[in-house]
Amino acid sequence: MRPTAALGSGFAGLFAAIKKVRPHRPIHPDGVMLHGTLTRTGPVIPSGISWIDAPGEDKVRARLSRSVGLPRWSPDILGLAVRVPSGANHFDVLLASTGVSFPGRFVLVPQQNIMAATFTSLMPYKGDKSAVLLGAFPLDPGGNLPATPVGLRTGLAKRPLELALCFSRPLGSWIRFGTLRLLHDPEQSSLRFDPIRHPLPGSETYAWTRALREPSYAEARADPDTQQPPVAGDSASGPGPDAVPTAGAPGAPSQ
Image (cartoon, rainbow, N blue to C red; front, top):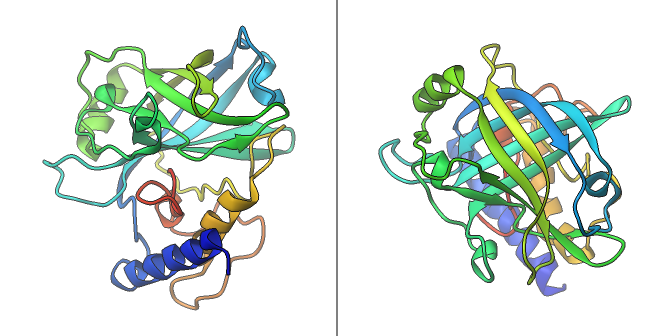
C-alpha cells in the first residue's frame, strides 16, 4: 500500500472512531449557514482553471464552523464551505484556517476571530498549468467577528463578511480573482458539502490527494444509524456539512 493510501485509511479509521462519540456531528459541530454573492473579475495572470479565470457572478450558500468543537471561549480550526451553482448542478469549495505564506499555508491555525483568520484549500487543485491553491482573506482584517454561532449570527445579520478570493501556486504569491460577500442565513437549512463528488470546474484531482481524502469522505457519507452510504447525489440531506471531513487533518482538509 502506498504511503498516501495508508494515511488515507488511517484518517478514515480516526474519523470512524470520532463518529462513535458524535454520530451525527463528528467534526464541525458548531457553525452557521450563510448566503451571499461570489463575484469573479478574473485574475491578471491565468490560473489554468477555467472557473477561476472566467469573470462571473453567482448566488452561493455557505457555512462557517468550528472544526474540533472545542469550548467556544477557545480558539478552534475554522472551516468555510461554499456551494456554487454550475448549470443544473453545483460544486463545493472547502477551505480551512491556515497561514498565508509558505509553509504556513499548509498548516492549520486555530482562530477566535473570523476577521483575523485566513482560509486556504490546504491541498492543491490540478490545473492546466500546475498545482493551484485557493484562498479567501477577510477584507477587514482589523475587525472583530467572534468565531462562535452567536457571534456569527449577530455580526453577519448587521453587515456582510467580505473576503478577497485568490489563487496561488504552492510556493507562489496570492493573486486575487474575485470577492465573496456573505450574510447570515436565518433559514439554517442543512447541506452536505462534498468537493470529491462536486469538484471545481476546470480542475482535476491529484491521485495522492484523492488517496488521502476519499476514504474519510466515504466514511462521512455513511449513514450513522445504518452505516450505509446515502443515495448518490443526495447532497441536500443528511447531517450537514459537519459530517464531511474537513479541517483538522490532511485527510480532512477543509470545511
